[in-house]
Image (cartoon, rainbow, N blue to C red; front, side, top):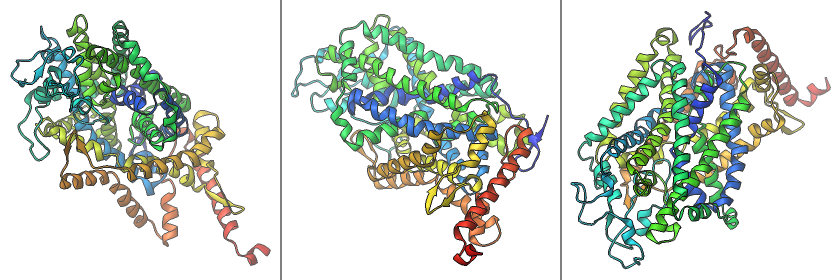
Amino acid sequence: MNKDTSGGDARHKREHWSSQWDYIMSMIGYCVGFGNLWRFPYLCNRNGGGAFLIPFLIFIVIAALPVFYLEASMAQFSGKGAVQTWNFCPLLKGIGIGTVIQVAICQPYYQILLAWPIYYMVKSCSSVLPWTTCGNWWNTDLCVEDISTLKGHSMNSTHVLNYTDAAGINGTGTSIAELWRNKTLSHTAVEEFYQYNVLNISSGIHEIGSMQWHIVGCLFASYVLIFLSLFRGIKASGKVVYVTALLPYILLVAIFIRTCMLPGAVDGILYYLKPDFSKLLTGQVWSEACIQVFYSLGPGWGIIMTASSYNKFREPTLRDAVILCTVSEGTSIFAGFVTFAILGVMAERIGVPIFEVVSSGPGLGFVAYPEALSHLPLPQLWSFLFFLMLLTVGLDSQFMFVELLSTTVIDQFPTTLRHRRGWVTGVICVIAFAAGIIICTQGGPYIMQLLDWYLAALSLYLFCTLECVAAVWLYGNTMYICMCAVMLSIKQLNEDIDMMSGRPLPVLVKVLWGIITPAILVIVFITTISQYESPTYGKYTYPVEATVVGWMVALLPVVPVIIVMIKALIKQHGSLQQRLMLSLRPNSQWRPAEDSLTTRHKESLLRNRRTFSENLRYIFKTPTQSKR
């Protein structure tokens, strides 16, 4: 076995997926998350229905897919994780560290979305679903059991359908509560179960309140599932995902077929698809389409790099990227059919237009869906299957989050930790569980909302933009200026991918990587920042000090980029320009994952570096030098 350490020339043989299908299934599980199920359908309906698919599909092709392919290619070529892959451009290695910080902050609070389905699954085994009745210890005097009793009530009625969209995780938007708040005064049983039993939420972020031990227990159970799936590495987790990635599709199709048999389902589907092309004239539609694409596929988090680093060197990354993007976003579109079929049934029962029951976020997953499923035959079975689906969807994403953290640690200390992956995974799970306990308090949902609101506010599009710039314009110093026009060579990157896949980069990919994709990302980044609003939780407004903390969280992933840049410049010698040029060059640890190609790759780097230097001398030579 060839040896390797992170700091030397020796190399450890990296573990690989047992088959390419293990990788495909793992990445499908990562890309298909809660946002596909409860955020995309709402955005699609709000932004022109079927017309929203036009900008959505455009941004998949020209923005998300190119970044996905770039991250997968760089990591597969080097066989390194999210941090070590940046050895190709040491000046920007802080981006890799920033992605790890993003995941380290996100993972503990995201895990709570696995604890809630586990709790609902346990309660689904009751003889009577507890969210279908009033008179329980958590119910108020305003509780209403059957929403059909609200049928025909007007704005001045005395009942309420008060679905609160708690925690805007993975999507914000108008909740059913906001649409009904002024119509009536009562709460449905399903909403009171969510608010006063599951969350038992306090009055604000300043009131942490007591621990919700039933959620703590479910959170612990979710980490046990994570550990058991990952402690033996990707060869074991690659088999688990065949269940966790495929099961949601089976259950989603089953729920869709059963829902379509109920009155109102077809009306909901037609409402979902009805196009409003006038919406395409507004910038918000295009901005939200791009944001949703990146939100769903997940580039810029280091996950794609981590998973791809376990691929065999010759795997066709472009093919895999196209497959994964197609499956992920196709799932989003299909989830819209299921969601609006459910909402159509609800609207039919209540006797109101469909737009009055449209919502997004956990309020849809933990209020609207349970309400609709409780009226099916065998409601306990359908509810259990639905929350099992939510659990498996969340597990797949968390598999990759924890895998990124463990891979990063092991890549830093390969000699010591390579054979102790189980211990590393266990320690990460324990630390994350301890960090996530605060989300299990009464004030936890406010903390979760604040973190989710700010975490990727600055870093996500900044990192993706810099990835394109570093790989295309800076890698191997292959950017050069000729005849007073900016010309993009991408020569070194093209040779690396040709070495790996046996074919050069398509011209369209070069244009996208070099110009179109980074330009779009810059525009979306500026638009997002300019339109950013202070966080809210329903009608609750966060205090100023909470907003300050939020922006500090937003800056945390960016800080390592600046620190590593300064450190890289100080480490080199010479003038500032010389230091800059040297820190842009790949370091000695950057090499192909296939050892037999190392010498060929070094020669390629030296050849392109000489070409770059000759171009610079040609550009900046004086008229006298030119005549000579």
